Image (cartoon, rainbow, N blue to C red; front, side, top):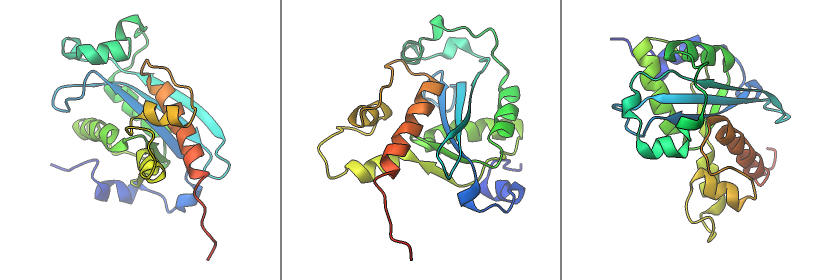
Length: 200
């Protein structure tokens, strides 16, 4: 079986664009739980950003129709306030991934612990045999946080909310894909402003 989302299969579909010119796509996903073997993606959010000016181009969030609501983890249900949200306009997983693909076309994905989000995306792209159009390179803001705070006493951990609080970025205790994608972008801006290199 062809691995639709393997890096080697993604690469030939990428245009020859300098990485500096690719839009940045800050993403966050919410799930019915954390078990990759049974839980589903509930929502995907993107904040598309100009790589040179760091100005927001647009924002987008998708809610997804889930196939097994009985598998929603109680903690996940509470964290995202699932029962208080309107899912009447939710799309199928396939519709969502196709729209996400077009929206984040050739952009560089950036997330907070992006490996976890990508594991679910990889699984579902694979299941539906959809080849992602995003750049096969990805960036993790959590690594920037580690490099900035490893020699400091705060934050105590590298969760999104702990890092946001340390940087005086307001973020709700209620998890939401778009809220968290925006917070990831704000954290990125603050952390990269501390990184300077001399031109060779």
